[in-house]
Image (spheres, helix red, strand yellow):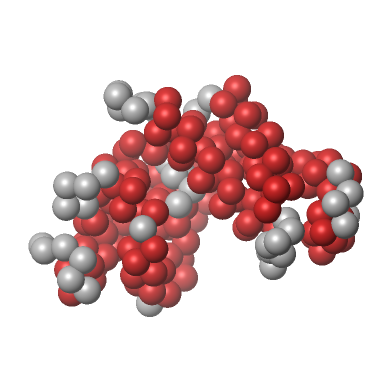
Length: 187
């Protein structure tokens, strides 16, 4: 079923919309959650919560790209669950590593996840990424939005791991400089 047909089912409040969404995007949402949570049980719960959130938010929202809309919901729910599960301890997986890497460029002592959710920071980062080469932007997003491992990004892009690390390092430096220029924090 096409995305616009699924969205129309939501608008008509037909419960089949959830079934069609899960059939088409359930695995995608699961993989988004799994990269953050590294737990099948928690990821399955996030998928269920994503379907409920979609049901509750469509309408009034009418997503242009359903996959992206669901991915964002899954990501946000996964991050919330991660924070809840690891409130007092450092967890496993790519999320803590990726957050530690990026925090060197954007953190000035406040909680990095809270800073990443701030609208102003998101706009600056989005503008920064628009100015980057497409492949570099994709690598950055795979690492810091989808929390993929360096190895997965390497396999996906065809670049060696050392090149991926170098690209990310240089981008973090440029981003840090950009944030300092914007007065977001002092270098």
